[in-house]
Image (cartoon, rainbow, N blue to C red):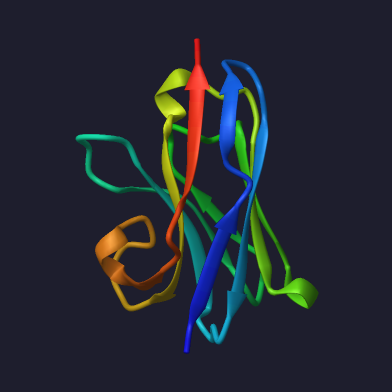
Length: 122
């Protein structure tokens, strides 16, 4: 049974940093990803990592500011978020079990964590 648990969210001022963690168990998926959803908006892809090779993919809105990484020994995927902006405010979700299609499309992932809230004030 797949279980994903996120942590590390919080409230920061614009320009600040946060590091999110996602501890995974029962996951055999080749890809793991971070998504986010702001109030009144659709869930959107943020970053994806290929677990076997470590290659990464980012949404244009976070390129150069966010970094996805993994520690396979700890079954953990991280999202380092630097130079945060108020528009980054959202619930952030860890996802696994990519089916097929687009790596930044939430509909193409079938396992999800409960999420962790990130709030960035100006």
